[in-house]
Image 1 (tube, one colour):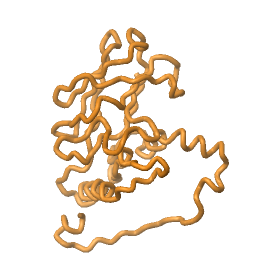
Image 2 (tube, one colour):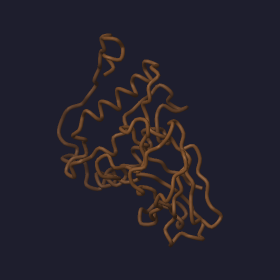
Image 3 (cartoon, rainbow, N blue to C red):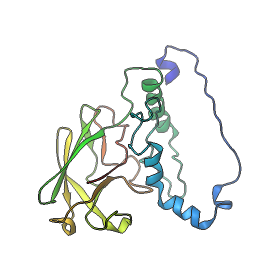
Image 4 (cartoon, one colour):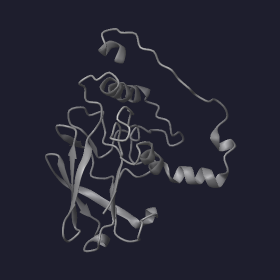
Length: 215
């Protein structure tokens, strides 16, 4: 795609890779468990705790969001390489070659809470409009100082959409309590294949990335 978009200009790729045995064979079980349990945190740190790239910390870095492409429960690597290729090549065109192309999904610009903690409004930017595919994927935490345990997070479903703003309805156990945090797609496998909640309306193959915010 990059080769074609640049009018047939030759493209060179450099790969620096380590080969070897599967990590499970030599990694201690406790460390492996920590790694698996913290997949969302690893994804978050890869973007310097912003949730997307490029950003102000790494303005020349790009990536392909692929957390919605897992279709094999026994393998963490997406089998649909064309989707990864499409998303990554678009990002390369936009960031490395300064082409005027859309290469990422919507980005959270603001979050506002209702006074009763019954609803949360999330407003996006970076796209003309957003496509909703299902109401799930958001969670809130209303107890625990750091909300470090997944069991403390409860669903907040999308109840309506107005332009680039969605409204979340908070689970009953958190209504009238102080909300401590909001997160999106914060699971190892957060959704079924291409079934995250939010995608770009103008390019339905570009999902919004994971997100977390503490109030």
